[in-house]
Image (tube, rainbow over all chains, first blue to last red; front, side, top):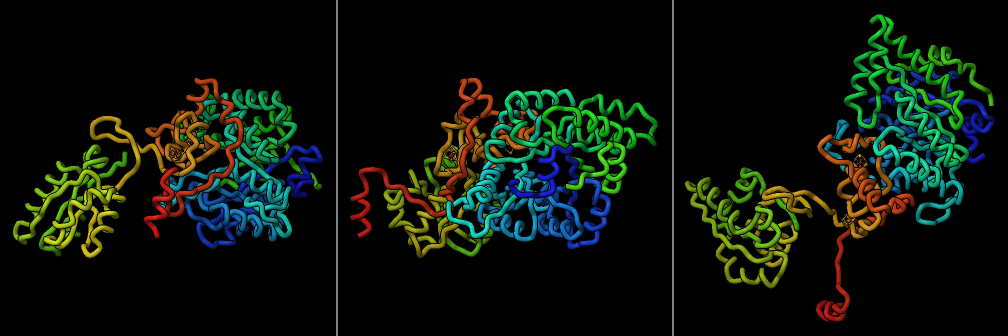
Length: 307
Length: 224
Ligand code: SF4
Ligand code: SF4
């Protein structure tokens, strides 16, 4: 065991992992996050706690991660490179570990221009690859990036993101290989809608032996409406929503669109369970946490294993 | 070259409005090439200032030096500045500071915003290319600067926001890492970016000096 987190134990035991996500509040509203967690507890193995997502100021991800621990839900502490330099990063990693956080997701972060403080200075002292390397060095060598010794090293299960859909497609699997070489233990992908593409990407990852070294959890976000699908298709950078998804949602009765979205998600999860090289699924129901129990039930991933 | 843009006229006007005699100082090098602060621009600015301050009787003189980033040329102003109450420089930030250093008793005001180190795309059209990071990695990135041309200055890109050849920040902005990939792939040199690029040494976070080889002794003598 590298960190002994629940996610690591679930994956190590060979179970199909099922992880969720929660966005911290735009304020110090502890109840709102506790409320969201109620829907997630027991239905997922771990919850990603986003870090000022889309560059909007929110409660810090490590603080919200501690609230998750208090509520009995294992957090995945997300850290972006946009807001902290290497000094603050290492300090936060130590603090997070000291408070019981055992998983981290290392990300570049959306550009600050998308958020509510577009004038701010983006830090990007390290990039996500270098952040992964740094966490691994802290954990495995017990050393800071500078090379100095750490007094009690942080044992963190290291996560990274992948976008299997962005151009150039041929480069995607090599970038995955770089993240594995940097030290990623698990990968959570961008929301998947283009199934042929992810199949091809996983096939390449299998061929290169990467899936033996890293646990891959494709991202799944059920479409709530046709508007959401169209928005994701045209407005969200890096998102790949094929026309067939939109056509399928348009083909059902207006009242049944959300249900159809869940159906598509469940079909994806069913396929992922059977796919060699896929170790679980990361469910990202955007502002739809209360639907997680139903989605988990319909996707047949309940009960979650006790490990 | 260093690219600059003239400041909005109202900002310039408010900086000099309390003085009686103002010397506008142009620079004949980078800012002249990029049409921001050469002798022509000095002339135009002074014409606008004369018009705006006609009633107030402020006088505007004009001088354009070959380079404001060189004391040798600044010396040409030594017996002229005394007649003026303040200096309005149209050089880049480096030139403005050197002018202020040469004449520490005179208020010096910037008439341009120094924008970047860049290239000429066409007449009047420039693009940033280098942030003077101090550790050039263009060999690894196929001649495309990841510090400047990538909105997140990533050394191991592209990020997840790369959008069909564009950067996530705008569809008009090409993704630097897409370009790096294309360039290296065309040259059969993708191995350059297969390796992980380690954390950068941001040496541009503190004031820097360069002494070229062979000049160390001379600098030492000047400092002692
Ligand atoms: S890497 Fe970019 S910023 Fe650094 S010196 Fe080279 S061109 Fe300039
Ligand atoms: S989209 Fe490309 S250029 Fe823009 S921040 Fe990401 S890697 Fe850099």
